[in-house]
Length: 267
Image (cartoon, rainbow, N blue to C red; front, side):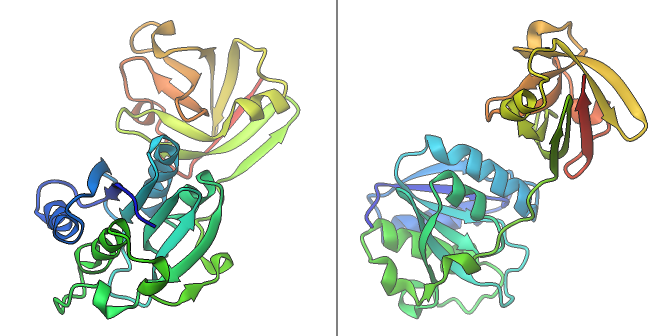
């Protein structure tokens, strides 16, 4: 597969030279490739957060080689893989980071393990596979190297998946796990408009939100500004998820919620 675009996501941050080193490797191998930096601010080693961001962003990218590195298992026996999914090839560690993005692209179709030494950098390092393994593989794919040249095939059913977030729908009740918290503190649940409809909650303008022993009644609004500044609300966010937010505030802090917490929404 030849692609004019490489989409690049990591938890490297921008304080060090890690991102620049990977950009440099791509430029040396595939100088005509254009790079879209999805984000380099995934919380350090937070594979689940990276998986959510990648899956949410993928539908808006052009056909791309998607280079994603959030890799707390670097230097271990975890596999390095490239996965064909729809019009994209996803390159990264086989630790669950790529799975939801592959789903968003229509599902993993084929995969290989990145073992061919001619498509790696021979630096001798064991702590920077983003530079030495994943960026070269992505660049070579962007330059037209066939996927099969990078290593042996992998059964797509063996690819690692993150645990599915908790979700239960009943009459006038949705119980859902906090799926992700964004940089604004908006708290997105593992439920959306479809679950509200299934629970017959979509016609309500206010809903009861219960976290542990705490309950409150929040408006289900169309925008953040539908409530006064500083007030909490429920909204369907840009990814289609039901989210708790505070107009010009931080819902995660105000409501003491973080990924993995369970929230009950009821009439």
